Image 1 (cartoon, rainbow, N blue to C red):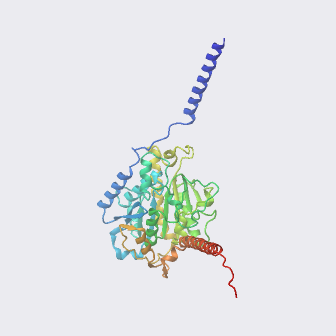
Image 2: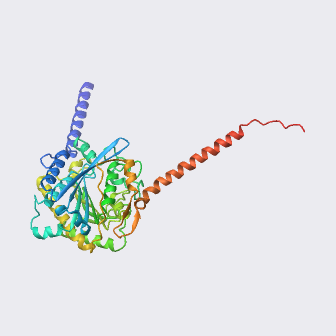
Image 3: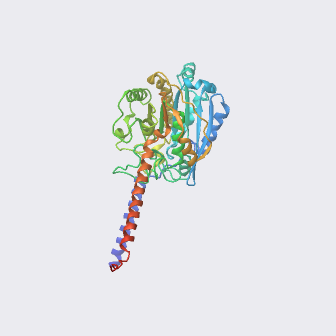
Amino acid sequence: MGHFFSLFFFAFLQSFFLANGNNDNITHPPLVPINRDLYHSSGDLMEMINGLVHRHPDKLTMEKIKSINKGYQAEISVVTYCRGRKDNDDSSKFRILLSFGQHGRELISTELAFRILSILSEEQFLPNVDSAYLNSTLDKLVIKVVPMENLNGRKIVEAGDLCERRNGRGVDLNRNWSVDWGKKEKDYDPYEENPGTGPFSEPETQIMRKLAISFDPHVWVNVHSGMEALFMPYDHRNTTPDGVSSHQMKLLLEEVNRLHCQNRCMTGSGGGSVGYLAHGTATDYMYDIIRVPMAFTFEIYGDGAASSKDCFKMFNPTDLTTFNRVLNDWSAAFFTIFKLGPQQLGEVHSKLHVPNMHTEESIDEYLNGYLMQRSSRHGKKMEVLDVGLQEMRTYFRLFLLSSVLLLFMFCSRIAKSKSSRPVLPAMPL
């Protein structure tokens, strides 16, 4: 009888674990891999962009910029669109800076960069758009496109870590800028949001800052995925800025939302709309420090039903129909920005001279270049050191703290030395 009950109990446990194993298979489906039929590898994508530039030298140029910090090197390719490429015409043109692929896992953003460049080079076309009217709009613009800001992080994703958003040494590039850098909220995730050892500790961010200072854009857009949203400053506060520029940004986003999102996109400040505050972001720096009149963060896709561990599915379309819809809708949205941006801001201010950028630089060379003088879009001379005042304050505080500690140690050593001296007997009179 005892043997019978032992067999019965064993059979019960076996059926229990099998049932739970089946439930796990139901509730936890396999993670979706990268769809290689839809998405280019980073190498293939940059090769195709190189091909566009080579075939259309009258419209496109490309430069590759490298920076090194403590043995870690990054390279960023920057594609410039300017019809006719006549430098003497640039002073009257409206400047737009676009960045894609800041987080490695957001592959759809880099595909959008390629689509926009293909349309600018006229190898692809927007439906229902008069090409003559489009060209007359583009004649007034200079557009710089960073197709893949975080190449090192992207390679980690392609190697199999589909949830990686950070760069090649584990820093979130969208927390490495100086505005409100390093502040941590209650829900801070050190894996996801590592801000680095200090503002601009990462070569990728150093390159992007120098590019923004030299180009001095009127419009900045940082393109991400994870949801559908049109954000303006601020990310580190739950409010939007005051003033005319803020009103112009709101009007532009409302129009883009109506035309291309059918009013389904979340709009407003990043900090006030997402449900959490983000500190040290690129868009807040562009608006507060570089003084870009229109600074945005666009989120172009998100699968809210996907598991938080199923990152490729959460951040990227996985079927051809959705993939094409996202690229078509958002490329059209950007050309609306190209058209309405100059209209919203009115008269274009005089263009800053753009110096030639070194293809490779150390951090010391970068800092030497950073202390140059420039003329702002308002015509006032200013030191670029003032532009980086916030990050300089951080280093100054560290200097003061180390000075106080050294002074304390020095005083302690003197006091200890005095107390250890032998007491000599009094000399007789």
